[in-house]
Length: 207
Ligand code: XMP
Image 1 (tube, rainbow, N blue to C red):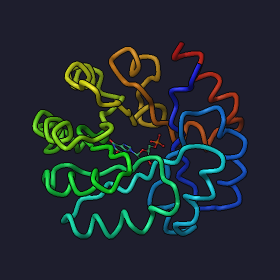
Image 2 (image 1 turned 90 degrees about the vertical axis):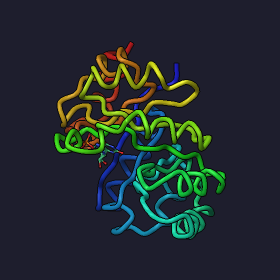
Image 3 (image 1 turned 90 degrees about the horizontal axis):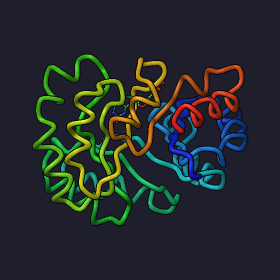
Image 4 (image 1 turned 60 degrees about the vertical axis):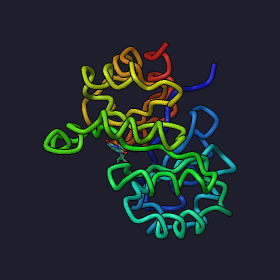
């Protein structure tokens, strides 16, 4: 059975990142990297990690269509599996990213407390725009089960990726029960003394 874990390896030590990716790559659905890793290791890390797993680039892009296109072009040769963007900038930017052919995941609800001040209040409009743009998936927080359930019930074809599990308090089992297709787990895996056991534990918790 395919794993439903996306390992968020927010590491800045390249050797450690490559070693951990080689160890766990086949046991997770994908590896997600974020700016700390890109800024320390450079964009070629996307291609290097692709030999171990699918790679999701958590860039949270929020810009005009032309800049989004320029960024996507910079990583197209690195074989990224998907890229995360912020749909709040508008459907023109979102559609531009989708048109590059890289699977696009739009942030609809975030996991940090402050997200309830603005972003999460607009999840319905954001979800509707992501659907309309022909994107691949959405980000919906895995530590806010009520909201996750509501969002998931309206997801249609979109894959639901949920951060906020582990270090931010969410439970893998509850997140899946409330509609996540995949859970995103960072520190609980890469800070663990035994990441392989941690992944096995999460996989069995999900089942
Ligand atoms: P931890 O260590 O908290 O790492 O498991 C989570 C990873 O996911 C990112 N993150 C988010 N990304 N929407 C996103 O698109 C969110 O609501 C969200 N919350 C956390 C975080 O930057 C880290 O890479």
